[in-house]
Length: 130
Image 1 (cartoon, rainbow, N blue to C red):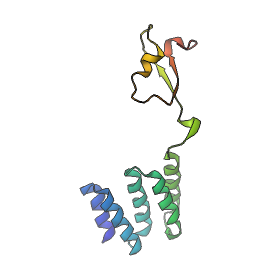
Image 2: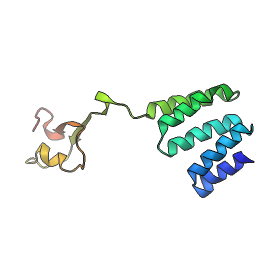
Image 3: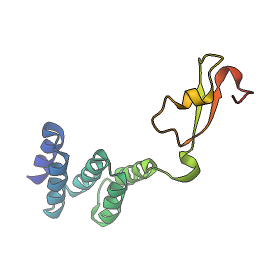
Image 4: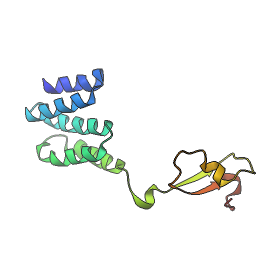
């Protein structure tokens, strides 16, 4: 049973690539196809490839016959988690408490990569940008 082996690989062995392959085998062999599609997408997401998980769901949509609402919810939730680009990735940094003499440069120095921090604002001085 490919599906049972995939679940075992995912949860007991924590071997996500193996689980993904077994979920795909389960789909090919007609074993719990609806669940295997959703589980394979979830494994792709756990492996850090949410975009591939969404593509996988879309490519296999025609095979989903039951649980269509669960399928649609999973696709919608995963789609929301794909890393957005542009202005949405700009981050604002609001610090409290912070020493009164501190500067924005000192705050930015706390981060290895602060390129997306557009502005630093100190909670005690919301009207002031230091």
